[in-house]
Amino acid sequence: MATTANIRNNAVILFKSKRMKVIGFQHVKPGKGGAFVRTKLKDIKSGKIIDHTFNAGAKLEFIKVEAKEMQFLYLDGENFVFMDNETYEQLMVHESIVSNNKHFLIAGMNVDIISDSEEILDIRMPAHVILKVVKTEPGFKGNTATGATKPAIVETGLELNVPLFINEEEHLKIDTRSGEYVERAKNK
Image (cartoon, rainbow, N blue to C red; front, top):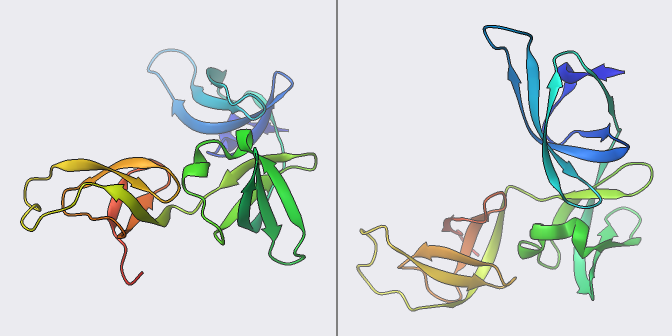
């Protein structure tokens, strides 16, 4: 059995009979007293996030997970349909598992589906995606030096702030971790 020394981000552990994903951790060694590990855990079933502190060296049960690259095809009601790139089998993933990643999914995109032996646990997105602006106020020449932003809506329905010089139909590089504008996409 593993200990707190083995904790890593995105690891899945069995905690209080629930599968929990580690979304953040910090090893703390205070000047007085024993060391401990402060964690932020996400319940895979409910999506609830809790903070928990483990004593250093505490025994933990890690769940073996595997990632399989699959292609997003389309949305069918509350289910997202993915296709295995090797066997061409289709897999339906409920909206609750996809959660906020739905704002970055476009047809034909490859993502990693994370699962254990029983069920799908999560979807791992690429760090950046390229999305087209479908609605924003027009940009004007010279609106580049102030650092001001305006709202824009991209093809997936995500609303974000972009610089004033961005126009409709332009393609943007967006960070999937924060949902923020990175830069204009090159050669799209």
